[in-house]
Length: 261
Image 1: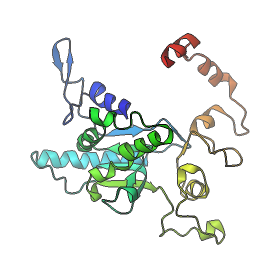
Image 2: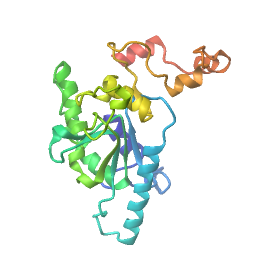
Image 3: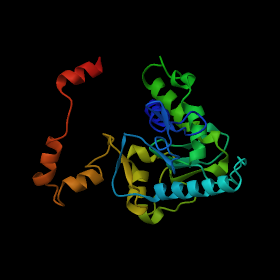
Image 4: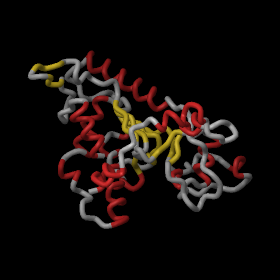
């Protein structure tokens, strides 16, 4: 979360309310921090299994609508319920109840006006210290509760959406795929269980976690990166990718030790 906040303020010039032009050699540079069309936050614990642009295209469309409304009525802060936050996965069941209404942090898109809400929710110094000192799993639980689950309730219900559900919805009928069995409503996609397989095989779900749960048997679905690097038989494409990977400036052991300190 800290990296996302730093990127917004230091790289894009966001001051908490708007994107401010950068200061270059004492002169305001209007091109240094242009108004972005949309903002995307991607968690580095996920990996793509195929090319996927649906979420990107969707939030860019909402951003265009939002900006058109702003041009027509600059002082109007009510965007006529235009969606501002779209997540890859979410459990948008009961607005106002944090445990049952949240969007996940794997891949999220924000319109420019949504950035202020995200920033004030996740980036103040107090938020950065919210989970400091909590031991073990309590720290992980705190991070999920404070920075992921509670974010959806900062928006109005009509401003939030998700591309895929986090759990098997009651309205979905998977009995043909499961041959008569039902998928548990507690089966979360990230665990790599039956619901993940259903999303991947039936709905062409595009992501998976880098970490593949140990209780799963067999190999995980091949990522887009591995599809580029390996042939259909799984053989590594030595001719190009080996030389490319070898040329990357990996840190030395000394640099890595210094970083750990």
